[in-house]
Image (cartoon, rainbow, N blue to C red; front, side, top):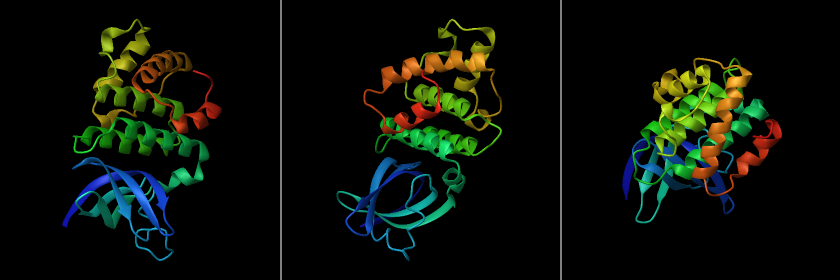
Length: 217
């Protein structure tokens, strides 16, 4: 079996058997892949902390004929702050589920990975409203996947038009550097909602929790 190292974020982790997990990763090198983490649920396993959603870092895998096996994780960011803020955690799980819907194996997902990482960092920034972070993430992710029109395609207020252009065109590292008025935020949320429900053709479990946190769209 070939041994490879990838950089990525764990999108989900599912118990398998008594001690194992099946994890799904969004990676720079291989797109979205799944791997078995043997013994990851054992108390003294070196994979116990690293084989969990939100973990970002380098992952060593054995590439088998039909699947990958996770053998080591060098985690740079656990995003543990999300475990202390239940509201932010709900948004975070939604971000993971939405990118999981679009990502594919062996496709170039570098931009989606960078967007997800920066968006999770924004979620743990107390100065940024979670609704704003969600709005930016949705629009940019839909744009990356060809599911969102060009900035000038909407009849918007001046402030909303400027914000829309900024969200779609600025480098991802600069995306979370502004706030919006409630009126502009609501205006853009309505558009993002319309294109999301058109692009995503199945229910997302994490959205059910967000509906309890946010006003109806």
